[in-house]
Length: 442
Image 1 (cartoon, one colour):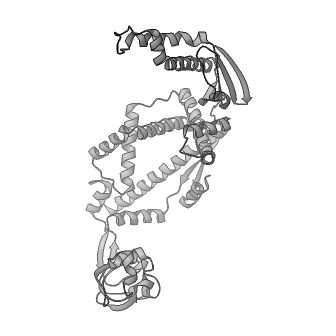
Image 2 (tube, helix red, strand yellow):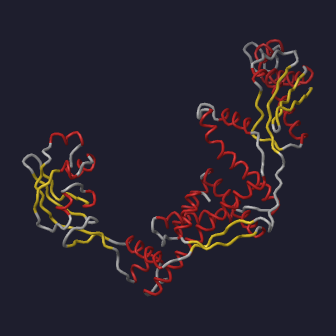
Image 3 (tube, one colour):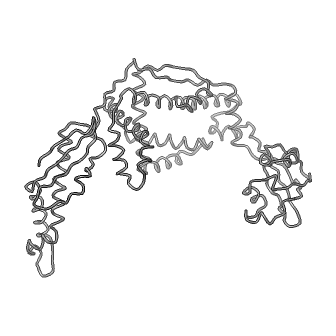
């Protein structure tokens, strides 16, 4: 087999293979001999069918499979011997893709191949990356305390309504009536809102529901009819307030402390305040760490300066996603793909440099942490350990989630090493400034 390569551009080459009959015929003959030995045909004992008949039945398959075997070995050998870091997959050129292969004749096939230069990355103290410390304010502590108590709050009856309260009212006119309709005062619009704000149980007044509740979905729900039925209902209703309820936060108590922090972990108002500050600090430190790792990734990608065969990769992505994405969509999403690809190359190089390994225990513990985090997002901090374990095991049983967790653990271990080698420029910021940095992508 003859192999010729031609450089197309800096990181793309065309490799042409000429496969002589002497290269593929041994495989072709072996395939046919095996078929003759194992095939049972009517009128012939097993293995006794004439080779001419076997060739007529399986000759085309034998030819194509043997050529593909030789071709694949040729590609593999070329890639191995070249010493280059190939990217994506070889793609057959259009001018050779449509050529007919004829048994007994030389076969010419050419492929376009993309590659990259080896990753060179050596983090050092000359590399400076910002590391943010978010300041904790009394306002932030008060806000967290308020939100935590709201998590365990409940609806309570109050004397009069504000625009943050819910009134329960009977609505009547000659053609339609609704008892104990639930109305959140904040959704009422126009002059009718003045009638609801300050309303008390027993108050009576009239409203035009079309004006007070212009959203048809909300209005239909309140009147307990379909949206199509609204046009047949007189919009003028007499309203009688049944009662007014407000969502009231829970009051501090041992029961509340136990629900928020686990049994007997907090036993006084002072300990409650200290626990709030610790949780706030943990939250801020987690956000700061996530940004640091994101910034480290961005810095290392820029520092490494990895060039990619962009046009080749776009064509390859379009090919492997044929029917799923247009070339325009591939081009639009390519920058994100290229960034992730560059980071994966850097991550692989640094994992080798630092001898980073991800064990089963690493994966399991990361899945446990993620399960706890998911429950905490819903204000559930005292989840039984067996529930957390079940959630973690479900995650790891899903191939996609397990791969994502493995990559996250690997990246964290790598970046933990990197942050020890670079210079972290520590900066104190307010939480508002930190949020601005996140929004601006800085």
